[in-house]
Length: 81
Image (cartoon, rainbow, N blue to C red; front, side, top):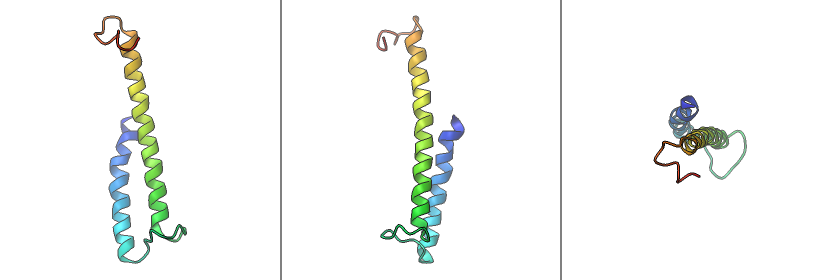
């Protein structure tokens, strides 16, 4: 799960760097959604990366809430029942 969340930390700066470099060489166009421009690929990569990271965060939080709910000795057991 850490890798799934951690990949966003790597992907986001790389896509930003790709956007800056492609903008310098006139391959970054916000208006056009043509696949020849980097904006399309950058947006798709960021969207997939965020989706994977949020899925991992939700899975971890559900597991934590479930374990807190099932543990009778926990101080938080009455909050999740």
